[in-house]
Image 1 (cartoon, helix red, strand yellow):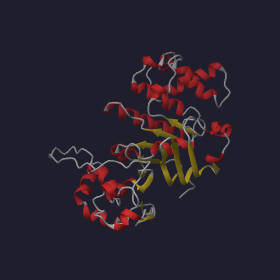
Image 2 (cartoon, rainbow, N blue to C red):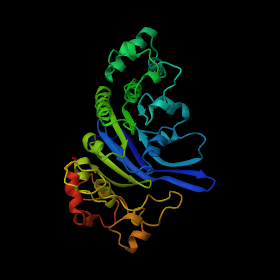
Image 3 (cartoon, one colour):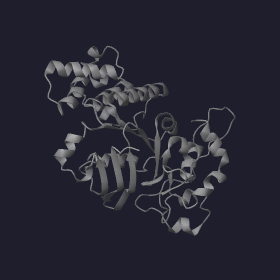
Image 4 (cartoon, one colour):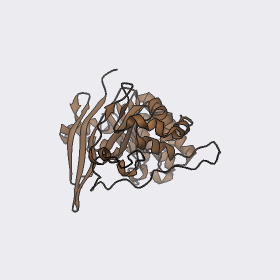
Length: 342
């Protein structure tokens, strides 16, 4: 396998609050390879977005936080770069498609002007050439009559159109890595499908790797080459998308699959994961998932020892569960249901 574009090792992010320390990300490690789509999946609060935002220096400056670990991007540690050098990489080599485009677009400027600003930040270009480039970008992400869309304001765009504009900004400088943070949130199903097609086309246009942050396993099954499953700030399972859906080896992954609605019309009830995610300020001892895990069954090792993320079977399949070999035998029904969405 080729060298990774991005290699994260033992990344930890903690927030200091007036009531205590919140460990949002705890020793996370994974790689992103050239041209691939890596899905990062988990419940809200699992640390998905914080992991990627911390690499780009986009955690709000008002937050009091500590970061440790390593994030190598083309041989340079993003966590050690001065702010000026990080700004040069952000938006040029690494692009972010945010979750809520309406809060990222300035209502006082036209969309064409704002997409052009993304180009101007990293390239010198005459005004006419810049306008041609912006119109080209708007056309690439599927805007009809992109020349007319250039002079419109964000409030004149629908939610799907605003998300397309953010994708146009993301690919404006042909980045090596695109990070899409819940890009289909609050969009209806039809528009979601369109946005994902645009995102795939943008990835091909820029010849970029894509990190897709989501809680939607359907999107992961359709879009991703590999998957990283996160829970309570930890990576609990990682591997090829086919392996994760067909041979999962962590109870949390199975729980996510069991929570999916099925389209078979056979009246099967959803199987929600019992309980709630742990308080990040007071995480449980041992495995963070053990209070909700059906395999724990009061076993002492689950309550006292944090399981290591270890290779199982195939070289690219990792799981952090003390009883990973029992997972498939315990839940054959969920395994058959998971196969229906792949």
